[in-house]
Image 1 (tube, rainbow, N blue to C red):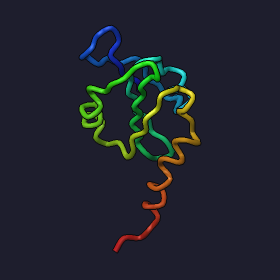
Image 2 (cartoon, helix red, strand yellow; image 1 turned 180 degrees about the horizontal axis):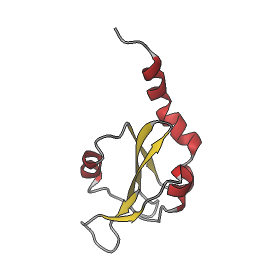
Image 3 (cartoon, helix red, strand yellow; image 1 turned 90 degrees about the horizontal axis):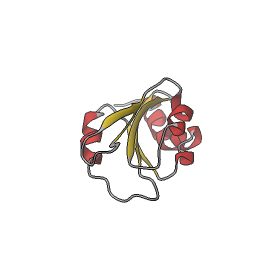
Image 4 (tube, rainbow, N blue to C red; image 1 turned 180 degrees about the vertical axis):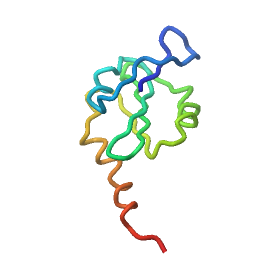
Length: 103
């Protein structure tokens, strides 16, 4: 799922949704501020994308609270940064924690 501001400055709307994973999301990230949520290898990932051409994130906290079931947040400035390798690196610690016995 990818959401963004469109032609507004303060109202987020759905840009796209799908089941194609990280490759599909990266293909739908425009050159503006957008937020995405996807499931990656059992982890919920919140993506905050701020184009290199744009500064500022007024709603990052609100979006993170809305997607309260995310396990990790990643930030990108170029769609090409959003890859399975990058996400695997960001979520690797979650897989390790899930196999370590507690107690």
